[in-house]
Image (tube, rainbow, N blue to C red; front, side, top):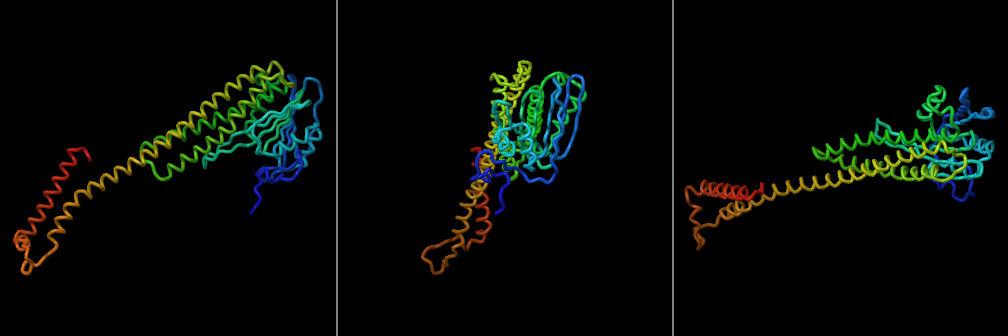
Length: 359
């Protein structure tokens, strides 16, 4: 059996802090994008597998965005360059981490999960984004590039808003805000899928409906496991007296925490709706089965006396040798008489059933 690249068991037997990549195998080169900016200028340099030079002037914020974690040697080199703890490097390379916040003397380490949605097959993914926050420096580590990061760089180059006047803490807030926006976008797509499923369940559902409901319920469980720790993480950023987080960034982090609460409310509401859809589907299927059984039972009840009549006159005892006489066997109108008797019994039973409201 092939080894699962996403299994944390790959580190079994190794000491804590071992730099082992746990994630999907990729062949694309690791890219490093350094964005240095201040209110007066901005510089962007993109390199492959090589650390670019940093702008060390006072008041300049440096943002190093690393895309690709499969080359462990580069991540280790970055760890040595910025004096990252071995446990931090280990967590960066382990892409199965839950959202969390670790506080070190020289930096803050943040892990979040960026949601992705593939409209073609409806699949949901959660990509890990790790951040190292320190004075005038932000390191971001991604498995693969996201358009949200490009939009942040566009805001920096376009000098839009306050991002050029703030520090690395506000830049980290911008990354977290982009992650939260992705959750909102994903929830909109899931609400559309839920509405379609609701119409399908109420209307003409098929055998595939139950599988789609279970699949959507699994997606909501996956999101729930990611959103709740994200809320706790953001709450810690603005409630706790943390280093490298300025007072100016607190209002924005608090607003972001409010957004995560909205996301949690939406996730819980959708989970309840999907659970309700499952109950409705099962009730509908049960009602349909009851209707089928009722029709079959009515037909069986009607044909029971008809079968009795046909069986009674189908015994064909020979009246010549039998001590008991069945005069109808020799009656010239016996056959049509038996048919009329069966028809009268069937009509009478149908009339009784209709009066009782059984069908």
